[in-house]
Image (cartoon, rainbow, N blue to C red; front, side, top):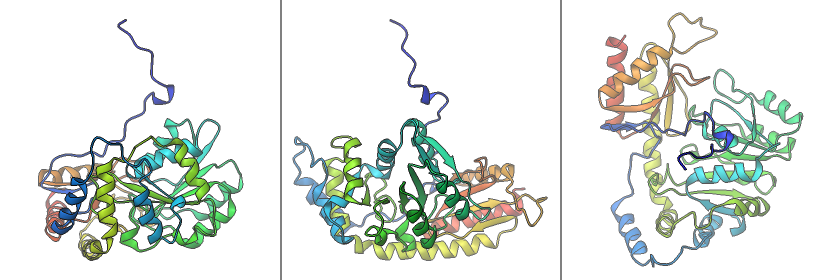
Length: 370
């Protein structure tokens, strides 16, 4: 037969997530750690991997790694679940708490995968847009929750791509106001030092999500984890794919997590470079750079005619800036035509040399690229 039935109706018109990877000398688009795992840890990793039996399935729940993470966070193993990157865990959360007749609370602009997962699982999305400074509209969020019908909410802190933190007092109020599962995505928390993990003992409806991809330099390995109540973890185990985290990734993650203190100096260097980059970008004309607690900065190309009380981004100018940068070997993330982020580019914090290349290219654009 030369035809096939249509795919599921929720896929109609859905664009797959595109990280917009392109080859470039200076890669500042994906919020990766510019510092790779050092030679000493690589040697230890190779010894661990060399001892594996590749013909055997891995521990399906990665219990040795769960124990390491649980102990570090003062939790029981049953309160930790690892996944194939944070992305798998986010999809599992949509499977377990979403579905037909159920609703997710979303705070755009934020990571687009949240809403995409909701659509894939036939979950309705209740959007509460952020304020002009990209902070959460706390009163509007609490008002929407008070209406009822929210099954889970995702609040990113620091938020991607805007970089700002969610207030701890706001999150406590949200957790107290609803029995919905509140997922606090802390993929970048090592760069802020701010976490809600300490609130797990007070809130059974809290789930904290983290990743090895950023601070621990393992974007290429795919490893994430959640901290939650044992009952939340039990539900997530029901929907996860068997053996989703392979033995090699488990071995790498065990070594890295046991030696996580070795990454603290690198994180501190990235934070220092973030502040230097923030200062340099802030001196360039026609651009607004937003404060960030993560390892990236959001830069808006300002529209010349926009009135001061209502600043607006210039999507056309931002598109030209992206092309100008890429033509000089610098790849950043283009959000210039994304709703609520019009005129914006997101730049990852790189090495000093990479950051200097970005600043020089943007300075040239500001002076010559109009």
